[in-house]
Length: 584
Ligand code: GAP
Image 1: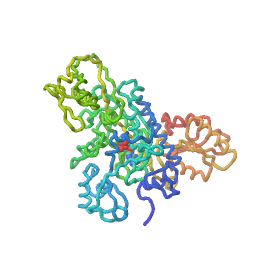
Image 2: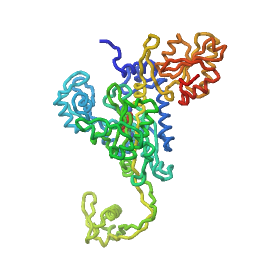
Image 3: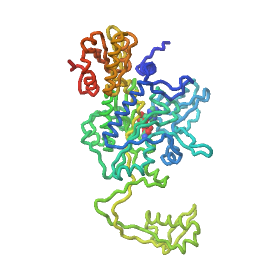
Image 4: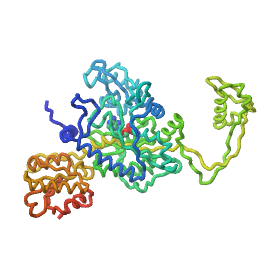
């Protein structure tokens, strides 16, 4: 059998390793699944995409950016629900010991499309009914138990009686836990947004498809804190943005299909229930296009109800098409007040914002002022807890004080307290506002999957001068290298001039590579393969006429330009203020 790559993904992974985009880490020690290193080209492309994201979602929206630790103590994840519920379904082959995701096995080998949302017993039944086998060794898996496997990497913080900690599975928790301080920076005004670009860690059962599913990856997340009763997005900014949507209803229908619409229409007719989600889908459609995602291979898909994360009330994914498969590259979730309420309940801090009313309001407030000379002897050291319980009961259910006694529960035992000893009263009070727990809308982007998508969608093959050529049609603003500078031949004068030009272009802020090895055709091919949009060649004529040849990557067309105009012209080409075709 031939080892030749058969599809674009295989060709891309080979090119990525050969040219320094990305490769499996720690190869010298046999490598380990799910960890990748971005080489010089990949790190530059990833950095450019992160800068473009920051420019749009933090600077462009007027939000703050923070940089939180990647390890956090256990109570954070007890509160967030990750310790309890951040699981995938694990099935282990009894013959070869390989672990697999049971839901992926089912989805890959049966007609079930959303196995993640099924209960474990049902997944076990499907594995048995379809006689599914281990993808590694072919052994039958019928009757093998499926278990929940928590995806967080555990660690210990400090020596000795160390504290348990976890590598964060999403950057978001680093923002939520700091809410009490962040709201001060936002002057206690809603709405405000906080962004973070950083690493997240998930001990994936079966990492696969190179950087698409890894165990350490980069997320770019925005947490928008808002008052659901007051704050609305400026939908006029995105109302006309055309999008391809795949709503849950269409996914469930027999002949369901994607819907071509605009953000304005989709919010109006309820396809997108939440206007904030609509707003972020709109700006993201435009942003993805600006960094080079092919919009004919892009859609937004709504989560089915069983598929949503434990914190989400509605969620849409941005998906890109890769060799016929759709992969999730971002999620847009309405997290309600889930996270802030949980952290408020589990910590000693206030995760609320004081919402001032336009006019002060008069409200009735039920309070207690218990008779401690009765509670003290009656309850001893528990008297304080009894007072708290009475206060809480008065606030929650004032009718409980209608009779002669009220009941409270203390360590599983019910106690009756005479109402006359509770000092219960209902008084009118004028209040200026209230403490509310804000809602959160979250666009969450996977940077590694974006790198993969941008490369895959930019991959081209054609023929130049009778020779096959591979090139990456990367957007000039994100390409790792913007211009290659070459002396035509190995010659001191040409090399000196080319080095001087390279230095001048770098001073202009352009990313430049200097290359004097091999014949000029090979040097062009090398730059085409890493997606460098332009190459500049210094030849013998340049020494006389002070001009160089500029070659465009996609068309391979060449033009002669004066050296002194080069920095300005190339900067304009990069910014999109000038087209190569328009050059004299
Ligand atoms: N804070 C929300 C959150 O983490 P998510 O859908 O689990 O939501 C967001 O993750 C994005 O992170 C995904 O859309 C995907 O692009 C990326 N991502 C998730 N798991 C990944 C993995 N194992 N490898 C690479 N990227 C991943």
